Image: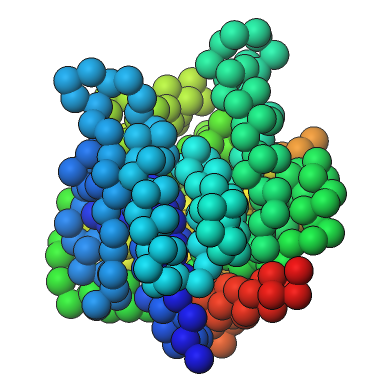
Length: 430
């Protein structure tokens, strides 16, 4: 018997934000596992970020998408977060679907965190079971939260109030990895005891790469045929990842001193790492490269490029760079893109990140590990880089493709669907 799921996501294609990918990928494969998805999302006409029309070509054909009424930021920007602006619209859309008996379960994927309460609201009104998916922790150790009445302090206080209310009575809690929801479960032991818990990574879809290959676009950030070794990092640079970035820069500096001929051909490109998704001048990496004395080896394109263009650049690069953070739970979603790009991966990751095993088991590249207290030494980074650039050994046909399936979006969706089944059984017994 096919069940029907309302999958709530503040952003959805053509949004280019990474938060839109969870719902897109799940909705592609859910019908294989007995669930018919209906995506409830904000109005793309009211997105503040630059859209990526190509992304809509990657949405499952025939998927029903409900675009909820969303407050505009024009002419007056009262609120920017899409969860705040689309909350009432999403609630009304879900209530309508529930009243018509068109859905059996409500699942909210966050961020936007401000959409999380909508699941419990619908549950209180209709009795429908609901769940919350953590793509990131909600209550964070915000930098600056100790300063009363600051923005970070206000965000943290609001999270501490909204989260326990939102997760109460949840039939299902899922997350990208256990660490993403661990803090919430510690603070809410009743939820840990009564909710179904499941963890699955983002995963990646081979269909995405098939489209990129068909388009045959030339990359515009670099020339793959210019004789240089082009390494690319694509994605946001999180605060807890800046020290990892600095460790990489220190390794670059030592590489230039010890092996100038290798350093001369290495060019590292950072894409979408700026202070704002659409600000072409919001550089965050170049100032740190300048401070490390390696500015000539680094290029930064601070604002995001389209998802399809990102995959295209990964597939045309000499290698893919993955930088993690000092937070053990952090598993960069960009790992999955790197694994399917068929390019060698060079990564600096926390030793407890699940991404370490993904890269090593699939044999797609080199991983240097770190902890909260200890980063790789410049000598370690420089030596690994020299060996990686000077004597590349990676071949796409030597990678363990069977491991890819374990970390695929399809397998992630299978785990999610099984968790939904268990959550429905648990809800039916209570």
